[in-house]
Length: 299
Image (cartoon, rainbow, N blue to C red; front, side):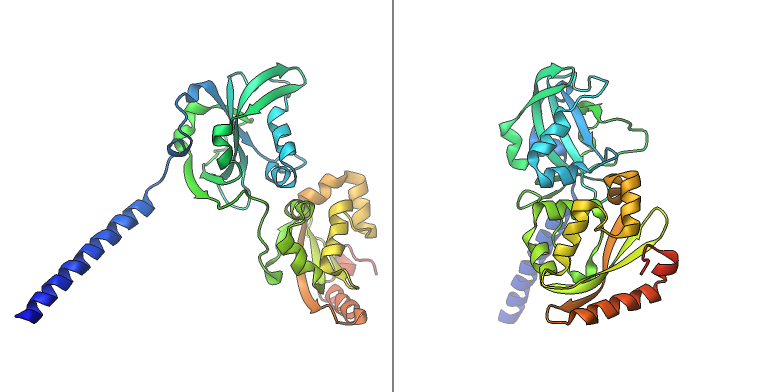
């Protein structure tokens, strides 16, 4: 009899546990609307700013490099008067993920000038800037950057609240580097310590691919500075002083590198590896990938 009672109690206990798990799962499956976090009572007083690639740079990269540059994105004025309402709610496209937008702040429009706006950040929402990541699908017909907030506010749902302000992509590992120029440029400008420490500590052979035509350039990093120093040269010049890449960048401007160049590492070697070994491996990859015949390598 005692054993039967114990089994009944245990069954009741685990039954409550199962009920609790179902409840938690249901909560996890629920979406959290944007306004549950920001509590904007008058969305018809706001313009929605969706900042995307402007042909030269990504707003997310500008935000990481310098928050004042991000403010400039919001205060910029073109031919149209976009900020016709008292307030602006601003998001930047978070390109590492699909349909993701990082909260960039709420602003009061203090002054409208012909050459730009003067905006005042809303201190109440500053704690979410660079941390609140939203899900929102911008369909193809949404042209421009300014929209009436009340038409879209209910379509934004919370994807994640980052533990700290976004400061660029975390280092993924040497074998997982597969990044475009613009992403790396922001990382190098911010001198992210995780990337810098890893890339400074190794020599290696890398490939730069041109997404506009499929051509590749094989290069190597040797000496004491490692891959970080070699790639920093590309970030600063766009071409790293390679003859063929220089021709492209000089003819088309730095935007060519930002729009088309893609970086990956083919081989990693410890810092004690003799430089000649690195150069020999570089020559191997040039032959293997035919980059002298069909790419940007000429030697």
